[in-house]
Amino acid sequence: MSLTETADCVMLNPMELIFEVREAEEGGYTARALGHSIFTEAESWDELRDNVLEATSLHFEDEPSRPKLIQLHFVKDELIAVEAA
Image (cartoon, rainbow, N blue to C red; front, top):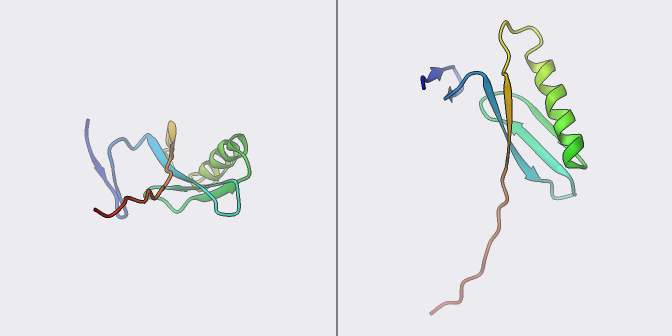
């Protein structure tokens, strides 16, 4: 596996684009691409998938090469209280 370096990120596979997905505070989901200026949001998971595809297509519209795979990486932050000893 080779590394490709760009001005704003190091990608393990330039044909794969990874989105960090989180639950939005007001409901639904937000997604942002790692290493690229792509951000979208949606009310449902299915809508988010459609929005990610559309945003990616628009972002790479004038580029000679585009990602072949998109990974949605869901991140959930949770705080758990631990009793003091």
